[in-house]
Image (cartoon, rainbow, N blue to C red):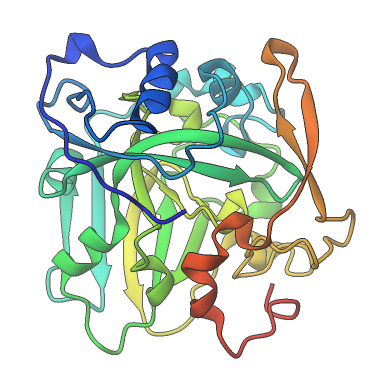
Length: 311
């Protein structure tokens, strides 16, 4: 699972790769060093091809976009795809602040522009016990951190989701959760090459229900760590308050690294349901891998820690 980056050239946005061709292209890439190319969402930005799991085909567009957790738009798996059309993603501003030399409020275009976009295929493992394989488009989180010139005393980065009740109509969980949704990473985790800020899916604009226009993906952690619709990043000294680890710490820890040996209080994490079955969402039962299969890349981050205790 070592990242291999291959450079691509530009093509018109009308030639963004459809799902079937994308899958064929990935098979082709496994046998040759040459690849096709795509621009990013009509912005004219070249994307790099980063095949990370050549042995696992991605889930379908339909599965990825209609089986979601995004409680601001409802509690059911299909609620976000039905309700997230109310989210307004243009214009969009991301605030960078805290312990850094270059804080500011950035228009999304300016936030993205300095980075080279990449296509990456990552496993996604939900703490609820289901999983997918998803082809994301985005750029390394480390790019933003380095541009911000973070102070040495900063040890964490905190993230915040948009909260606008007019756009996000779900009210039922507000007393319990206390919006906006918040997440965080240790700074060395955030700087790891696998930590990824996502703006697209299957080479297309990221759908609202999947966290448009900007979300985080940290593939070795349970999915709720990969915060959606980000409006703020703050560099801080102390471990930040995060939504689920604050509201239900026995069930959702700050680290939330995928670990089949650590049982959720209400279910085992030893296996998972890989979504695999079209519209009715069948699945196949597979073994859960330690750190979601990324142990070779990230286990060194936790040397000296008992990951059974530091969930």
